[in-house]
Image (tube, rainbow, N blue to C red; front, side, top):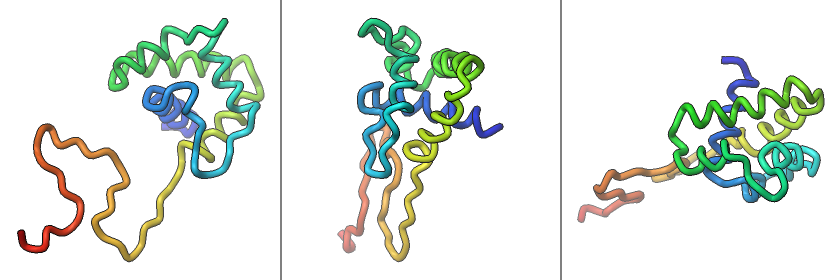
Length: 127
């Protein structure tokens, strides 16, 4: 899979999870206003969020809805020469955050889904 496709998928999933307004709040480097405005202008017209993004937020695991959001971004990449550099910036500063954890145990860096069972991080000290 080429890097742009991966970036598009990650951006779509990130928008579905965080929403358009909170998608670029990071603990890392700040994303430029131009890059943020590029994405917001893609998915917001006249203070209304595009239907493709709304539907993806309702069903974030839907491949068809993710593809619809991806298509919106791909169309703009074809027409807007600056869009690719904005996508690259967003990928570098928001979507590609790596955690380097060393000499530690009991660390979770992702989402835990128990399916109704119990989850425990840490030792139970023999209990």
